[in-house]
Length: 233
Image (cartoon, rainbow, N blue to C red; front, side):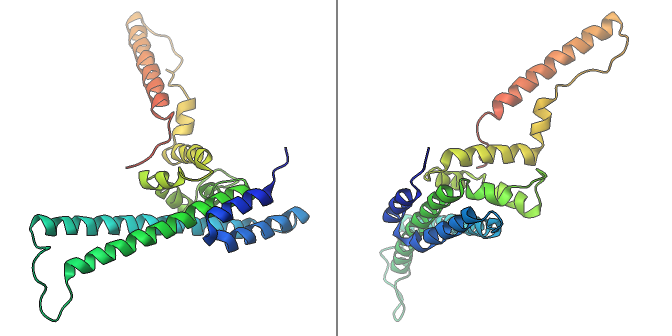
């Protein structure tokens, strides 16, 4: 099935105009790679993935700042200080915080639109998610920075952002795989706990059989626990 990349990219740019330049550069890089496989593009692609990851970090940081100011304004209202007269010669600190809060909301909207647009363009042109691009290794062993990225992308707030993109499903699957890698669960879930081979007395056999049953129950419980993406709160 042939994908109409041009039409799909035009639709992304139409909905998220701020990503037009980045989207066009992604297209150029991909087209150059298709012309010659010797034209290396992984470094540029991964740099774009890192930028998207950093954009999400800024967006989440602004959310924390917004929440802090909201809490501060709530405290002021609870104490009925929002109606008090400002000190002569100075601005009203309550009004200043309200204006700042409005600015932060605008900043967050701008970042969120850019993040979704970039993610959709990235997924369309490179066929992978940003977090997968910056955590992929040939040896399946995560380095220091890759572990850092993997842990950051597992927060509930990060997950909520990515669920608004075209690569939501693929992102969830990869985050689950990263959770297994970080916690060493992949091998653990594949290997059942078995007793050593030896001659047992009747009493020992009863004990060992009980241990096997308990281990099997624990294994089933673990498998059910990790069927869904692990999102840290």
